[in-house]
Image 1: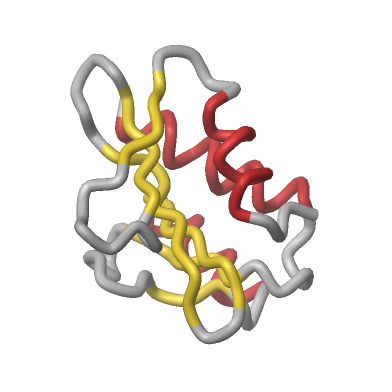
Image 2 (image 1 turned 30 degrees about the horizontal axis):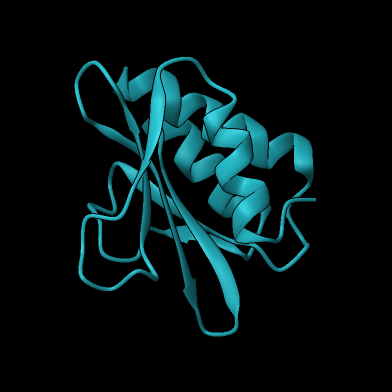
Length: 109
């Protein structure tokens, strides 16, 4: 289970040609981006007592994970038809969390 910001950042940095960015004056928001196109594939932030991760997904998968986990919801501060928020409260399996980040990485590449 990834519940700490640094664990999630390190996982995202394990992909090739990505970097960590802080695009706002509020350092609570970490953005993981592709070097080639600068597109974000993960937004990592602290909210309501938990680390959250916003990830992009395909419609069917977005709905699948929203139905499977109460802690996967339409994305906070992003387009809700294309992005989900994962609330890292320990209820989402590591395998599913990685699957959602993987999909976001590939969709934004």
